[in-house]
Length: 153
Image (cartoon, rainbow, N blue to C red; front, side, top):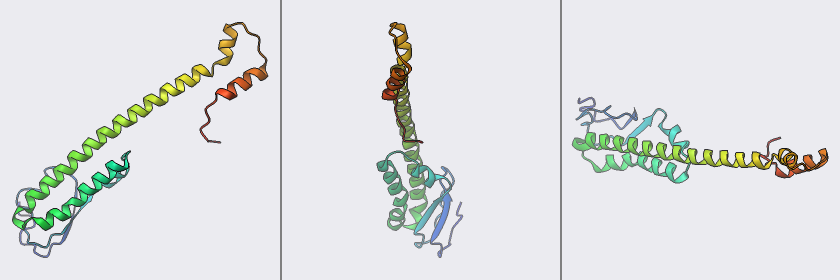
């Protein structure tokens, strides 16, 4: 409590993104506090989000603190900072869940595609079951036509 009381020259701080880190009245330090930098893995997490729209929204939310600090008198800055931290945590948790949903959907689609390709690629087994005589060259050609190339060498 009152951690930065009367630190009127304080212009910038770096803090981790952690709920309940800042106690009430911690930032009654004058009007000079202009920048709060988040440290830790938050920026890496934001960079790994799947959609650019999500990344941009998170960057905007993180940078919103600068406007907050300009608009609030020092007496109210602590509460505003606490609400901002809560908002950033809430948004990143939401996007992490959405990210997992997208990954699950893509994984399912990939598994279905590979399963179908495996079924379609079983030319030899199907031809043997129907008792059609084939040559090795025909099987090789049939398999090559069914292959999915990844671009890897």
